[in-house]
Each structure stands twice: as C-alpha cells, then as structure tokens.
Length: 149
Image 1 (cartoon, helix red, strand yellow):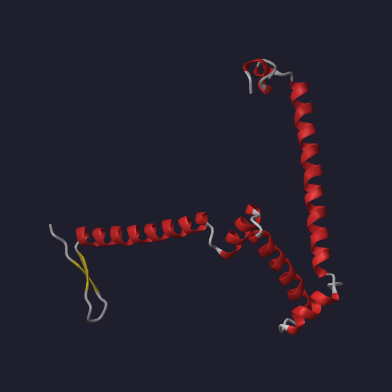
Image 2 (cartoon, rainbow, N blue to C red; image 1 turned 180 degrees about the horizontal axis):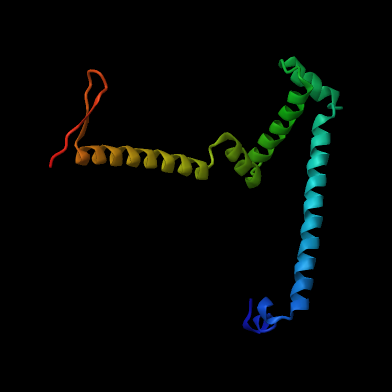
C-alpha cells in the first residue's frame, strides 16, 4: 500500500457512532450472506454425494474390482479424481491428500511436539521423585518415601 492511499484510511474509532454502527451492520449482513452460501454449497455437495452414479462404465469398473456399496463407489470416484489432480501437479490436491492421510508436515510436527512433551514430563516426574526421595519398591509396588530431614 502506498503512502498516498493510507492517508485516505480513517480509524474506525475516529468515525461517528452512526458510521460505526452502519459499518458493523454491513459486516453482519455480509457475514450472513457468506454463511448462507457456504451452507448451500455443503447441502448441494451432500445431495450430489447421495445420488447414484450415472456413468455406467465407471460403476461397472468399480463393481468388477469388488466395490458394491454405491456410497463407497461415489467416494472412490472422488478419491480417484483427487489422486489424478495431485499427479497432475495440483498443489491444493496434494495438500488436501496430505492432511487427510496425516502426512502433512504440520501434523508430523505436532505429533513430534507431543512426543517430546511426553518425554519431558516423564523426565520431570523422575527428577521430582528423586528430589523428594520417593522410590518404588519393585516387589509389591508399594511406595516408600524417604524423608531426609
């Protein structure tokens, strides 16, 4: 953004209460429209997924491979298309597949972080027990507390 265009911007707090209310109302209306569009798209997708496949060649091909359930055949067609898009270099398809399968680098990092935190917790617990003088007796799992006073 150039310096000239930023001069035209006015902080919302510097506007009148009526202008602020109008901006908030317009934002609320736009949000409602966006939510309605999203809900409609989800409904249309759900409806499309519930309809039988009309391409007889594709249905026959999947049924020959042992897929009998119509819902599974529809999902299998979507997965097949997703794989085709990924193989054609569609980065969004690749990211989506990675997220679905848990191969995403973000998911791997989160899993690694959880593993490290668990190890840290075990180590802290061991150190705490050593400092407190708590030893576990291996014979009958009784806890023996040594108070070094």
